[in-house]
Length: 119
Image: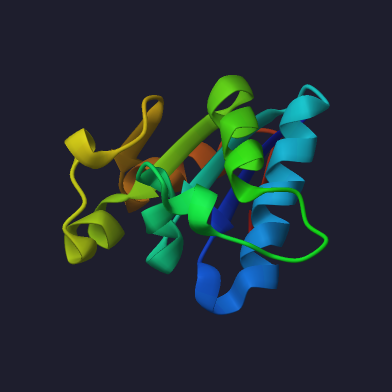
């Protein structure tokens, strides 16, 4: 199975697009794919405790549940620049969530058999 890297570029301000990124990532991880979800822009806040629980979208799986699946079965990364702009540090993050930058994202998506999706 190919690896999948998904970049979520929005948060609650574009709830449907944000939720699609989490839903596709969690579904792929549950199917056994190597999945990494990158949280950029306002989505960076979802790496912080309590933020995913506060997100709501009618008729969608709870974002906190999707995030928990990804932390357990995949990799969740908050963009370095996005974190800095929001004052988020490693110590602010949920256990299992990391901070990394564009060079790491590029390295991951340029690997053999990797598919990148941006929402």
